[in-house]
Amino acid sequence: MKKSIIRIIFLLSLSINAQVKIDNIYSIDFPNNYEKSESIEKAELPGRFKGKVSNRVKVETYTFNNSDKDFYILITTKYINENNEPIEYNPESISELYNKYGKYSKKIIESFSRKGFKFKDSTSIRINNFFGQKITFKDSISGNTNAEGNLIEINGKQYLAIYSKIAEFNENRKNKFLNSIKIDSSKEVKQITKPYDLKENLLELFFKGIFVIGIFYLIRKYKKTTGNTV
Image 1 (cartoon, rainbow, N blue to C red):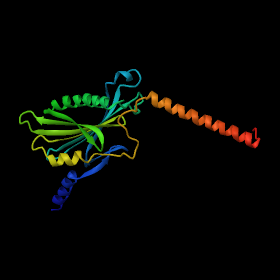
Image 2: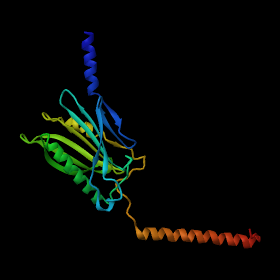
Image 3: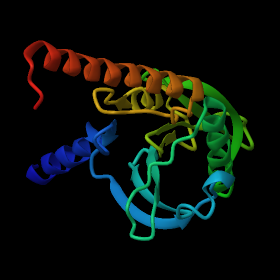
Image 4: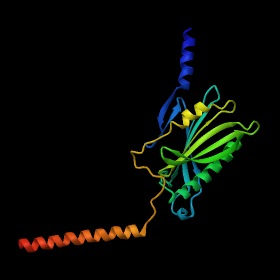
């Protein structure tokens, strides 16, 4: 009897989810007892970055698979330099951001197809008011959805959360998992690099120049009024 109770408690603990803080920006309601692995891989860089930064990324993978064959996975990808230190490479525009999503999604689709998941569709979404991408897979025989994931990039780091189940895809569990994603916007977060605006920068320099001239004028006026030449 005692062993049965312990077993029940253990099985219940596997199904309990907790908000896992992946880093200081991204967190998600992930099942307990997940496994984590890390690897260093090569990545394609835009032409403007080639020869300037490393084409290596650090990949962290969080996985959980329970007795009901519910599969949860979270993959984070971050550019790193030769010393394995993170590099913040942000796209210059929304179109470049979605271009990155397209290239990353292609790799995910190829990887999942080797495991029996057939690509169904991909759509643009908003995650906590940030631009993201939804990727859906289906069973090649029945055509039923068997996996869905949300991809988002924040501060040059990509986060891909996927829920899948071969048989009887559980829509409620999928929604609970993917809807639990939280982005801490109290931190300095961005998805694109602010492009260099020549007019804006010239205007800023102009007003800074006026400010300096104004200060210089006030100092000279003060000296004439007080007779202070120091």
